[in-house]
Image 1 (cartoon, rainbow, N blue to C red):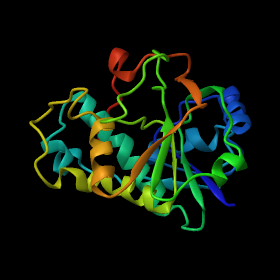
Image 2: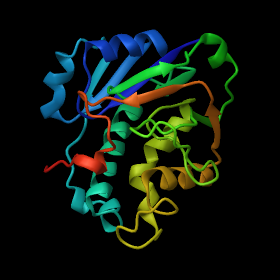
Image 3: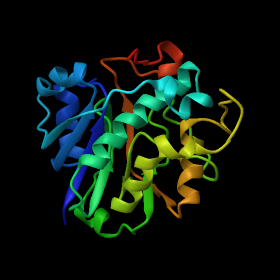
Length: 230
């Protein structure tokens, strides 16, 4: 069984997070993509990377996404999925499963074992049942949302996720910046897009973690949205 780990965006981790990730998720072939000004951070991080791709620069205001999500939360989400698209598109199509993770996650429970992977089904996105943020006890609404911070899928699932950032807003979805729990958030929009493309959502029951961005565990919207200026 061949497995790849996909990371994307600026590097926000440290040595203990790398070790924790290797112990819980596994030391599989790891790929990442970032804008050019973050490459040195990744290369000096200590993370053993199979390959590092450079995310293409783009004018956010010339994208369809900007027509509907032009607030801070919307721009933050765009860069998240723009980086993810590039790592998916450039990672070889030779793996049975792809694990989309983050470099700032501390896992507190669960293991991604070969037994777990051998029981996964195609065309299904698997993600934890708890949001990996500062409020670890909050469940997301399974009927309308998902956890977009950590998930596992086959190549077809990842190809659909890759198309989300460029294709989701090719048609009218909702009013500009109307981002609520029910409509407009990254999690609910991605869930809708996956549904439209025949991808099932299922749960990883035992995977628990918290975000640890160099000691900061709150959701980005509570302290500082990450925006690019290119």
